[in-house]
Image 1 (cartoon, rainbow, N blue to C red):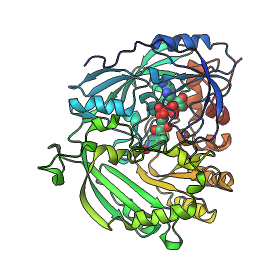
Image 2 (cartoon, rainbow, N blue to C red; image 1 turned 90 degrees about the horizontal axis):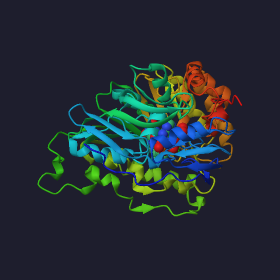
Image 3 (cartoon, helix red, strand yellow; image 1 turned 60 degrees about the vertical axis):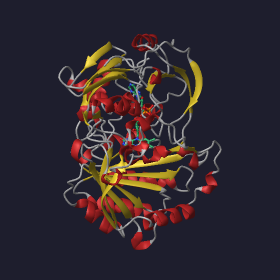
Image 4 (cartoon, helix red, strand yellow; image 1 turned 120 degrees about the vertical axis):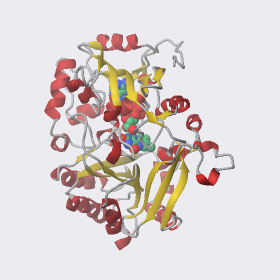
Length: 475
Ligand SMILES: Cc1cc2nc3c(=O)[nH]c(=O)nc-3n(C[C@H](O)[C@H](O)[C@H](O)COP(=O)(O)OP(=O)(O)OC[C@H]3O[C@@H](n4cnc5c(N)ncnc54)[C@H](O)[C@@H]3O)c2cc1C
């Protein structure tokens, strides 16, 4: 397949802008530049060699914290480099530029009977942003994270310019880049291994549990389904805390329509083309945070839990709303008001379930207002020194950033997580401390060794990197 979208634009001049992550917490002033051709990236990195505050790449800005911003310095907005370069239907490979989104990639792959093997909970992230975070999906226990499916990367580094990397040519730099948060270079293009798309449907088994013990029991057994995820109610009282709606699903066969839709027209939401549509509803600017309170969310959770059958088997669901339910509401982060939200995502290794229960207990005793909690199982770790997934349990908890006592409670949780060999997900982070992060990522030296090789003057810098001691300046 040939290029689908040809760029006729010219690179923008550097424009000063206020940037933040999806959580809308820490803002910074950055000079933003949008390259249109790979050579623009090479030129910017060369011009940064003696710049004081450095530069970092930014995709769609869907990381929650301060990873894709650089206070007082430069930011490369990579969304202008968004072409699908080629699709090799026979070998199942897709090559695209850094700024192509998951929605774009899935839409381009569908006519070839292919799809992406790993997707996050939103289709609006860019290819390079997903690689730089080594994202995981609902199938990590079966298929690993994105790192397992990247065949090659074109990376521009301050020391080496533009290079094509693969696990065969330079495994150390390749894996340090997967999950490397943009700090080993700017990804310009990447090739992923796609997989067959049998139909735009999944078939889901849904179970409702009454409390945490039952939830953990049900999720502890051997998992035969391809996708598995639980929505937890962490605002419920007493023994109801941790009650869940557990959804386990598999791709539906190849006839293209679910059993219930045979003989009728399948809903348009089923087709990957639906991915490019804008959401029907968008939260307006200035939405009053006061509307989102523990009491109203407790009621919402209870209604949602009650509205779900105790046990349902073989429910046919359209792929797009199944994988990206939050995309139905545009700009939903505005629900949290001007103070924003923290998404606290951690993983606890298998065998450390006591620590997991301690985390839930801490959230309960510190009265953390967890408005949304998503719980999953991870398969074995794979990939780079900063990759997040470890075999075990992961919880992603959305919290209003202005909640009283939140920072201190999260510090306590960090201690429990680090103490049992677990870690916090950097792409969601906005507040982790440097020492705790170092305890969570024991292969940090491997990462620094690669940085010293490709960025000896410390040109690649971000707010997250400064906060966590992941970058330095030789100037
Ligand atoms: C609603 C929602 C649901 C989500 N669900 C999941 C999920 O299920 N699983 C999961 O793993 N994550 C999930 N995420 C997190 C998201 O997938 C990651 O934060 C992803 O990195 C965002 O991509 P982006 O294009 O917005 O990157 P940005 O937020 O712009 O940047 C993220 C990181 O990538 C780096 N980067 C961006 N472009 C480049 C480039 N060209 N070269 C080098 N580095 C670059 C940046 O420097 C930064 O460090 C979710 C986020 C949201 C908002």
